[in-house]
Image (cartoon, one colour):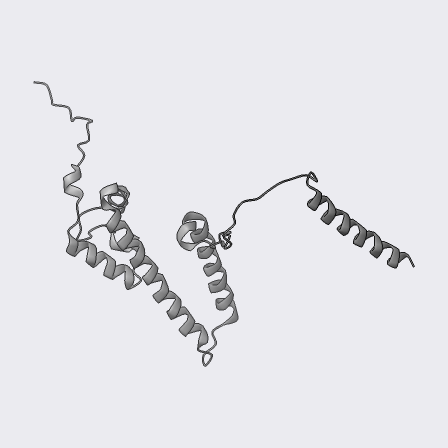
Amino acid sequence: MTEAKQSNIITAKSSQDLMLTTTQVNDICDQLIDSKQISEIFSKGNPYKISLRQFYDLLRRPENAEIKTKIEESRKLGIQGLLESLIRIYSNTDNVPDPNMVMWLKEKSRFCQFLAEKIIPELYGVKSKDMTVNSKNTQIIVSWLDSPELEQKYSSYEKINDDKKEIIEQ
């Protein structure tokens, strides 16, 4: 009698099984706003029956753009809550902790900030101001001294510059 060998084929769940209900999405958003980490929400034994990776796969789908926006907004609100808590802790000067503990916490927060800026710069990175032109004329005209008006202006500037050099030499 021959034994049946187990197949090496891994059956994947269908994409239909990976959907979340609106109630579940709202519950996840509430937890994120309460500053719970997303890795904690999708730890083993979570009530949503999907892993963190499957959740991120769900967010990547184009049809879930609205859910992705909602989750990102919830994460921002959660971060704001954490910042307010930190400000409250730092503003309390009644009980100053051990200086070594303060240095350790400071370095830990800098490390987290560094990681956040590198991993998710669009959310946690330094925002650079876009260069915008507020004037109506956005054309740049490059010309050489081919018009008499420009040549006259250039000559007047050169004369002023030469006069300054003469004054300095005296």
